[in-house]
Image (cartoon, rainbow, N blue to C red):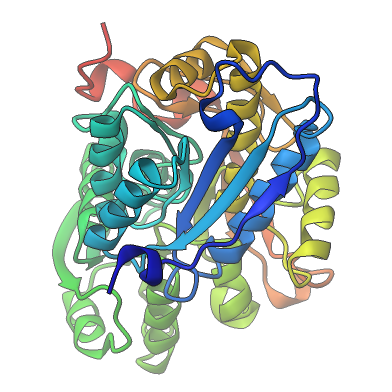
Length: 403
């Protein structure tokens, strides 16, 4: 099957007017490729909602009024690195895509990161989590926008150990993301005086967690750390309830839990979960206004942090293209690092030399059913993690771009 037939592509064209100098814009059009999981494990948390967010960013930036012609392409990478690489090559070589955006699944992220560097284009990750993207795999062509495995471990892992959850068993998705999240969280657990009693890795994706949950249960660890995401996290928690894990005195730590996961689980099963996110729709007036607009365009669902991240990242990318009057990949990435960030999603921030976008992270607890005032009212804020503490120190990542 050819890549062109395999990849569903939808175009969203924004009209060209005379106000913007097109000389430095390749093909006179800025082409954005939103690549993610459109129908599988990560479809609800990113998927079509990320496309909605990207289109909102183009419209809110005012591209058409500024004379900037922007086209959005969409592809489903099926959570497979080989598919992601093939799509990236097709987009860069044939379709002349300038930026690939979003990309859940860390193994796909690392594959597309390599292709982007070879083709000298631009790549911004919102959904993929591996902290290696700003460490040993950092690139002058890439930015990691919304969160990463280090920030999740630093937030959720640290908070749970400090409140008594000092013995852990990891249930880990067996690919790059799960490995990185397990690694970063284990380091935080041990640093804070906790211990890891065991770990087991499950296929990705997986529908049957029974054997893995039995191993976690028999370990007697206080905390079962779920180093997975999306449908895998939902299934593990639901099946854990059937095994009576929480009733037996153990607690799940969802190391990457999204708003859509809590919605799918329901507050009766998700209540009490501690989680770290970079965005919540009900944080302030600006996040509420954005989220209500998003919900009208996306079946009434409030945005996840990564869908919000797509909006924020694309807004900053377009500002950099406008300032440069060019869509040349590494030049735009460099300009994005040079310019401070400011948007209604994350407020003021910056992009470091290693490609890490810096902003606050938040530690939330999922509400009890009686505490919720209505649909999507799921979180209560436990702590704000300041931007300068929320991400791995630049000097510790091993990125060769950092001088």
